[in-house]
Image 1 (cartoon, rainbow, N blue to C red):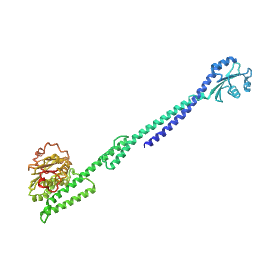
Image 2 (cartoon, rainbow, N blue to C red):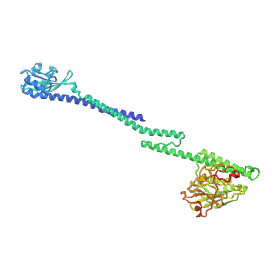
Image 3 (tube, rainbow, N blue to C red):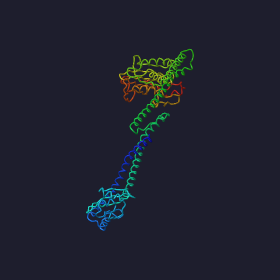
Image 4 (spheres, rainbow, N blue to C red):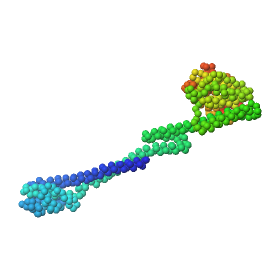
Length: 486
């Protein structure tokens, strides 16, 4: 594109320069010729008054010397009484100066009675007829050399050529700069596309250049941001779906030592069936490549009370085996929330699985469901040792690292709550351990800033919940149960 612009500018400028310079050069040459013959006419006119007065040779020589020069001017006076015939015969009584024109040309001028020019060696001559007092016609001959006709023409043509060349060079330079201004943004756009195609997701294009290229750069940067966001969503989805497998794996590992024909064997088989369903879900989701969203929107979602009852029914069997006391409150009436059923179930499984993973056998736990006018609060609490650093537990992937946990549990819960405009807080439970409060906003507004989670639920006498949401993995040794990972 750059060289195409340069070539077009070069062709157009050359045509313009030729169109103007050639006619102007011809005009300059004609002006120089006219100037030279105008000077010759003035010299001839200076001699005419003297010829009308006298024909004395000496006096005319002085007049010729003062008007021009002997080498450039000549006066041809016919013999007295010869008239036009004498001039036609070429018989001149008096000739002053050097004659360059032929006798025939001089006789023709006498006969026509008007000035004429004729070509001679080295230039041209101006033949000017002058009437004498005797009625005869004298002819004043003024020599105009070729150098006088072309005087200044070469310099003028050189100036025109220089100006034309300067215009051509200038137009090429301007076209080149304009081409660079257009080509560089286009090249940056191409380079950015190549970098993005090679996997460098941080590639962006400066929004510079012509308006069209600026728009293209804005569209490219927006597309790159969308690609990064989509890939991030896919990674989050893969992590969350993988984390859901931890719940049945926890049950399998906790019951692995008690396989047989009893209830533990049945629970293990049920957990295996659930694991298979989750794997099928992962396969279908990966095939569709469409991330699920936690928020289902107004009028959609699920019944939180039904999900709580279902998940507590699943975990209660394991709680009885380990001698844990458990309690469910507020799940006796339907509670609609704008959250997908699978997401709420995954969040509860993450929290309850963490209770079994990080607390000793026999530790009590509870799930409370509170339905307000603009929000629903789910509290998961336990009577364990609590969490030493709640802020670190809320940070994704910042588990203790001593028990193999991935640290994704609380992040699943947090993203589910924040998709509705709510949030998640960790505090102390009335049971003596940890309480995790899930605030689910019903109207989609951003959750208000609350100074403490106890004050947040006091206005509706809401209970407290806790269980660190970490990745459930096989139960650790008793020495490892004191730590909590989220």
